[in-house]
Length: 132
Image 1: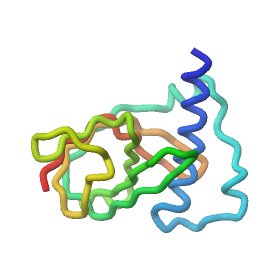
Image 2: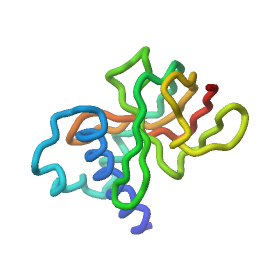
Image 3: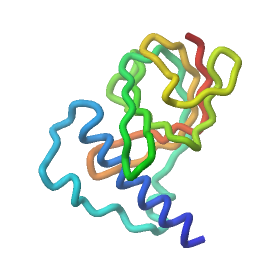
């Protein structure tokens, strides 16, 4: 159970970095040393499952703590940032794919958890169905 909490803490820290660097937010010098939220139930209680459908407007992939994280926004809601990692289930054009295969212009149906971070609100994508 502690390893799950440690992974969640690392993911929250990674989300904070992606939020600051991946989408043009102002990157502060202290971002690299930012402390993650405590690995307690507080992060869990803030998570809310949401679904969205639309066309990818921006997409980028970054390496955070040795793991590739793909961030994207949808044209209909450009202020909502979605993050997908290696544990995100991705189906593109009817075939299993990785989050890195997502491209600008892909039409997607995505499900994820809404999470508040020190750098804003993001959505951890759990499942993505895309058509190029």
